[in-house]
Picture (cartoon, rainbow, N blue to C red):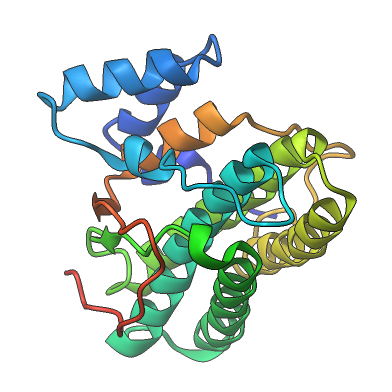
Length: 232
């Protein structure tokens, strides 16, 4: 069996790993400060992901923050798969995977937007750096995104205040885990390489996503529609 594709293979210049190391102390404020300094004051992907809205009726401010964090990750995944399918570079099982998972991610977006109501953040703009236009790059990136999504939900679940919100998050988490196992199988990587998964903090996920430079524009504070744009 071939070795699993790792973050290092996608993060060829070390940007994601370097940024994650910069927030090893799990300080959200510290990371955002460093992100602003590194970009000369321009708001980057981490700040976008950290955007908060006012609380929804039946949820705590903490739960709204967590759900908006999840929503932005789901926006990212949904756009990635939608664009990859529309680009026409995928074939066979990889295309079938992208179609099914893309539909799931769009359903997750709709679900979270409905749960958040007017508190939902809008969809950012994206540039997937050519990973949606090449099947090999798509496969490697999809594995990283799905593994990251699983770790993100696992990291936030213990922090959720409301039982109903926790149940909703877990229902998405288990599907994301199936996605991760599926793309790992396609890539010839072990679908379940260890007996236990290690969750990641919000700061670690923010840093990893910021390092990809996939998020290029801030979302509106209320959810907005619109068809995906091809990013090249």
